[in-house]
Length: 421
Image (cartoon, rainbow, N blue to C red; front, side, top):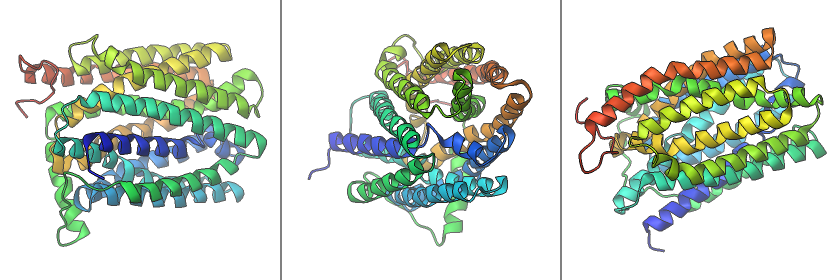
């Protein structure tokens, strides 16, 4: 079959859908697994922070694989690693493991995700450039948000109700099966297009070379550096919200075993994400600059988290959570298009991984800190603090927009390709 940009986009959206379905199958109940093992908020969030730390530490080494051995190789390694570590998570639950065991498994789980991060997006952009795709990247990323919402809806709702009918461990076994299926599909349909793997004398030399050049193309360019730093606090807070909104909703409803409610909440959340993807292009047209879209989204999400924390009942809390997901999905395509427009093809995957590294580093500190706040003062206070923390990112994001404005040409005022570094 002839390779066309349309086929590439279909493969990309199919992989996004299957990946999301597999990953989110345990989202409705993942934090409850740790709490059932006897961990406190602080211990559970510390274990989750180890996941974030592992994400940060291994982003560049695994990202370099996508830029040397190929995007497909990195993706397949991610699928196999996540399948194995999902089973280890289930085993830790069965054995009622101590917090150190959860922390160790969380680090290994993070390694699996780092093989994915950057590889799929880099594969898409390289292939579309090679095939001379003349559409907007934002449109593709927006459709991916819609597909992600659909996958999240099916996965999280299905996983929650499986847990309701059986126990919180069964969804992890189903997730492992889905991840293996995803890996087989990727092996069949995902081939590097517009990118030729470059392998040096050895893996350590590859990592060293790619790390040096990714820092130069990423951290060394102010336009890229500021948009990366702007995500540090927001990413850390979003990790915390995703992890703790489940026990918070159960606390509001007064039933610690209302897993079906978590399935409904996940469904509402996923539907909101789908709507956000559909509205992404319309939201972007309200602003001249891509970074203005991101700034507006950060402000809105900060306010929504404050109201989420102050909500006295489930309906208002779920409404705020849905709005939070919708705004996040609506602004992400603008950020992705901005960042990809700055990166050279042969370093794209690694710099995107470096972006994830910087964002994840915020979660290493933010999650345990907000978890401690929850232990001391309750979930509502921790969510209000998380909302207020969003303001920290605003001065940094304004610096990123300044570079976008200075780089724009009269013909294309929204193009984020800086003329200075």
